[in-house]
Image 1 (cartoon, helix red, strand yellow):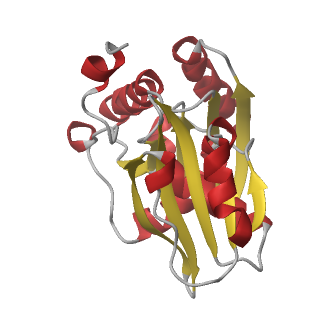
Image 2 (cartoon, one colour):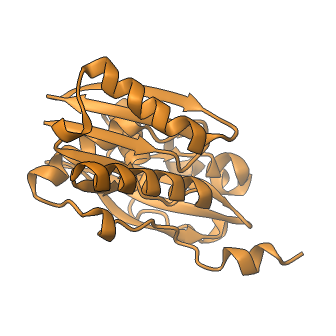
Length: 227
């Protein structure tokens, strides 16, 4: 299987190419400039493989949540590539990809709570669990740090994402159960490419017209205008 993946929803900008379970990735942390950088990265990674867009089975894309502009860049880039090539798309949650990356690094832990700073005193949260057949995104949402739902039970968990750095009291909430807290880990297109394999196998792809960003917040313009 051949899958190109694109992610620009956070300060990280990355593209990856999976070919028969081997992944090549270009990953950069940028302050800004994702829109100018992402297509050259796509061109570079395809040239390194000797493949063209028409050779791909799918294009995976980080569909959010994340920075509004970043999410739009990834989605519109993937739509353009799909329209030009006819290659189907696979939307992947930023929170899911980040949780899976954390669980891959800590194989004895079964669940990861991912929190990305959403500004305005809120975080994007997602709970990812390890299953017998892989991983599952149990839920995701937008909440104030005090309202982020913690998984039931007493099992250890991983706390991942810069939301835990932005809101110290959120870290304190999870610390009694956290086997590890990583405030620097960012989503990677490489993980999205691997996750997309299962989606393609089950036929869970969409056309460019049906790909939609996931913001989880719809009133950003109104709320950001408040003092």
